[in-house]
Length: 238
View 1 (cartoon, rainbow, N blue to C red):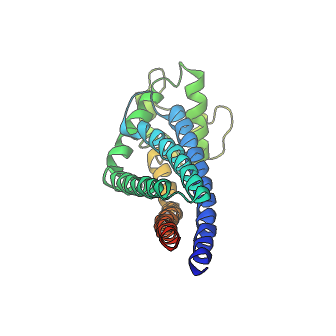
View 2 (cartoon, one colour):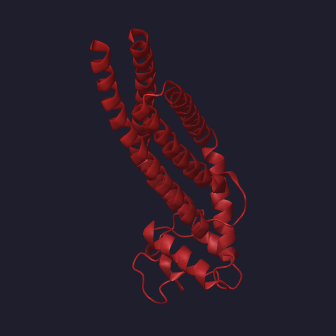
């Protein structure tokens, strides 16, 4: 009876964690898709470490959802083999997430430099591509910035006069405000710095969320091992 009661308790806790895994998986997939859309709008279509990051996030989300399904089947059928498989795959996911976090920290400067180069490359098409112009204007208005590194980057754009920047660089955006501008009327900071500063402000929230997900995953591994032990103990009693 004690073994059966303990097994039911472990199964209940595991079901709760499996629901949390499904929510995390959906969240990761959504973040990956949003990041991919962001990169498609702001970075040139080349295979780079930055462009592969959303794909990795989506892949981890899908894999986590499948692993949660395996865990659910194992818990329902009280199948120790499925639960062991669940624990192994979940451990692999934790290792991958740790590796991605470390890689993101180590290569953060490279990613920023890559983003700056790509942003400048997109700027060259500002006057010839309406879609590119709309995207760059939206980001400059949203992040209160001008150019990749600073407003002088626009001097290198073909067809752009030295005394002109896009109207989206202006503090108060009006038609023609970027022509014969004064420094006091435009944002002089580059978008790479502005975007980086905003991301750094939110890094604690991202880190807390990542630690929370990792903690839930570790609990899942522990409870799955406990359930395997309970299943085997039940068989021994029988």
